[in-house]
Image (cartoon, rainbow, N blue to C red; front, side):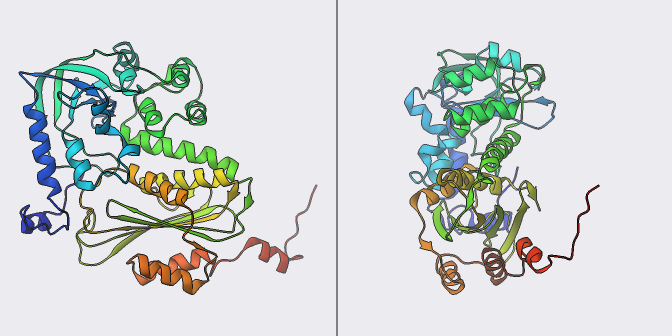
Length: 421
């Protein structure tokens, strides 16, 4: 969990708007959380879960499970409190923060991660994977606190509430394929493959994994939500990559662009066998960069599933890129440049990376087969990144300073000999 830069916030005091937003996200979040807490009437909260549920990681293997309930909000109106696909390009940063902060996160006392059966029997797990919002109610024993902390993988959350009793009142509607997987005794990756191929959406799959509904029945456990997001991205993208690696190489260099919530993305697909470069550039005052200059971070995947660093943002983007390559029946060398503007001081979760990259690819390329100077001009026109970042991007796209194996073998036909017994 992280906090925004104290220096910036102290100087701003919530009214100078030094972050560049139309209103202070911390104050907006705090006001929404207080409002949600005041709507918890006489120790009782009721409403429809969108659905949403979070599994914490603090104290593992004893963890807290939170069910999201917007107090007094029911039916389809409640769905919007956790609906990344619907939010995308329609809601701004401030709106998402206020919306999410207004949903109470109701928890029972911590349980062992092996307690998956109890969640299923109480229908808490089924409510969290329902196709539609489910009426839920809780008897509250304590409001645990109202914090301005946030998480880089997860959307913002509202006040956390400890309940004596959490009861699912409505009837969950579980996707048929997911219901089958709950009762099947199969490997987790196989279950996720079946669900993905049946068009069960990413976020439902993640909640099912997190709540211990998938995998060999004797080995099922609750999985902290942050871990489940990364695991789902990894499993789905690897399933796609296994197929994509057998496709012919892309014949053209294609450049795509998208932006949302003060994040910009440039995606370049170029001819070659699959490998990937991810570079993200953080402006000063943006979260994670308390310094005065641009800071950047890079991940390379020079061989499938061999990363120079593990990064949830890259894995989210990787899923969307591999979905696109699978859809066009080609493999390619992948370059993704992400620029995070100063206004992005309150992350809303990796879903915005996954959805924005997917949308950019679906719109089609903005440039085809650019020469080096054209691509350089495009990056400089659309984005503000250090010269070293631009240099690394150009080197990767055009394979500069890289020795191709096929060229090596052509020029060294008799240099290496393999003997057989």
